[in-house]
Length: 265
Image (cartoon, rainbow, N blue to C red; front, side):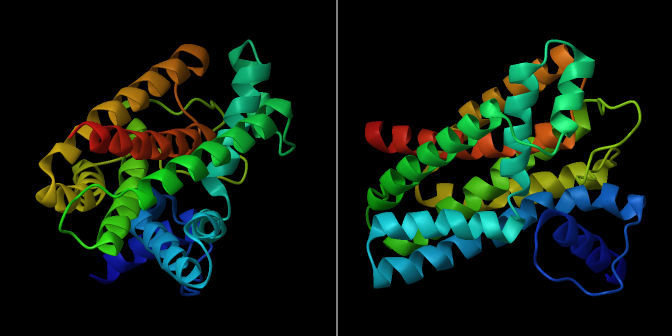
C-alpha cells in the first residue's frame, strides 16, 4: 500500500500542480508505474472543474461558470496538456521532417500554429462544455450529478486514450529527452489494467443511467488511433507533447459525442 501511494503521488506530482509529500522522488521506475494512475488524475481535475463550475454558476451565470471551470482545470495541471497541444501544432505545422518536427516541439517558444491552435481549442471547449452542461440529457437524474459525471468521465477517458499510446507505440526521441515533460516509457499489465479501470469507471457509472453513452468510446478512440498513426508516420512514435495533444483532442471529442448522442436519443 505504501508503495502504491508513492506511485500515485508520483503521478500527482508530474501531472498536476497539487502539492505532494516532500519525500516523493523522481525515480523513473515509479514514473513508469504511475501511468496506471494517469486517468485517476482526471478524476481530480474533473472534480476541481465541477466544484468551480458550481461556485460560479451560483454566483454568476452558467457561461461564466464554464469559463472559470476551464481555467481551474488548466491551473490545476499547470497547462501541461494545453502546452503539449500547442507544441504539436507548431511542430507538425512547421516541420516537414522528423528531426525538424522534434526540434520545433522541444522549443519552449510558442509559434503561430500553436497560438492559433490553443485559441481555437479553448473556444471550442467553452462552446461545447457550455452546450453540454446547459442541456443535460438524462431525464430524472439531478443536473449537477450529470455535470459531475460528465466532467470526470471526459478527463479520465481522454487521459486513458493518451496514456494508451505508451502501451502501443515507441518513444520517438532517440536521446530520451522530453524538455520538462518526463513521461512513462515502459509498462506492465498492472499499468494497462489500472489505466483502463480508472479511465472507464466514471463512464460506466454514467452509462448505468443511459447505456447509449458507452458509444462515445467509438469516436474518442477513433481519434486516438488516427492521431497515434499520424505521429507514427511523421516521427516514428510519440513524445510527451503528443500525449498532451491526444488528451486535449479526445476530451473535446468526448463532449461533442455526448452532445450528438443526446440530440438523437
